[in-house]
Image (cartoon, rainbow, N blue to C red; front, side):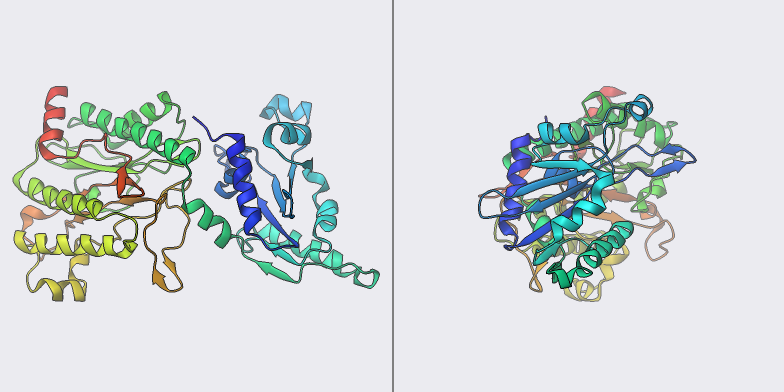
Length: 439
């Protein structure tokens, strides 16, 4: 399952339609990153560049030039090199980029400086995300200076530079039907991996062995890599929000929190499930777990077009605060505890984030200073949690070291929502029954 080339072409045209007349946009690819000496990390293309091209090679540059007709798409890429291809793999080259990826023109990256001066000459506005690619920033400055040197000959350079992020990231925030299908599949594969983890979990396994089961399921279902570093935190480690060491032994009587999602054709799944290592919740674990679950279900139920994003977070704070009072972990008036932020000792993050090509996806949460309302096509995570630090001396010892988060991926629809990760069980009885059958 992949985005079609017609889909990439439509995205480019939609972006050019938003650009002003007489403008040009520059979007760089990612480069390979050294891991150690002459070994690189697995290459992952820049999300903006891939979103507009589907081209998965490093050291490339996309140039978009709108016009009243269809606009012009120019791509600079690595040239074909039979000797280098023997060592590092085949390249599309300029001809392949035109034939396979819909470029109107393509040139070797070695011709970038010469040709960009020509492409920028006479344009009024340059769309470019300055500050994100230091070496390219210097090149862009050099191109503009090169044009200015010929001003007496009538050459003119763009007089205005505008961050491309606002236009492009607003476009990426709203998912097409093709993107929604990919994210459904990513949600399903990610959910199946969480089920697998519940099935094989037992005391004595290391956290990384449980992680391996998840990663194996991703790979066997078309996802070579996870969308982010998987979190597998047993016991106290579940109280560390971004714990990724995943090296401790899972112990009987502890919970294990797993935050993991696959990446399918550059689209992320992002699911968190928390369950007992030995298959049975203790009374305290169950009480906190059911509070987090009730909170998550209430927040998901509140999702629909027109609801401000912050209202979903406020709902989570309200439900968790009241529940923590009922369980005796907080004391006092609920409104005052919310006003003073007392709940943050147990719930210190927002309810979620946008989800898409990046696990913490692009898109503004506020527009003109106001929290934006949800709209169809947006995808967000809903992930309330309670984390009782093992060092929290203000609560009874029986609660300490319990960390719980429950996270799902939710698509905003025309009349409500769709949970893309619903296949991962999250009810107490459901989880215990699954783990009992697998024991």
